[in-house]
Length: 71
Image (tube, rainbow, N blue to C red; front, side, top):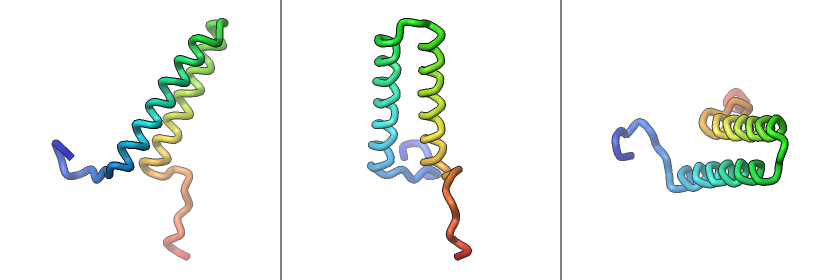
């Protein structure tokens, strides 16, 4: 990494994060252009952002993963 060695991201990690950001951007644009009701638009964009954050956190630290170290 450019500034610190504390992060160990591979090329695959950057590709996955880029794909997630691209999907988020495309999803927000799709919702903005297709949904006309402001309240529904805000709700759907909020849900999309929450989904993005859950996926990001899961990939970063594995909040839903199970540990098989004891098995």
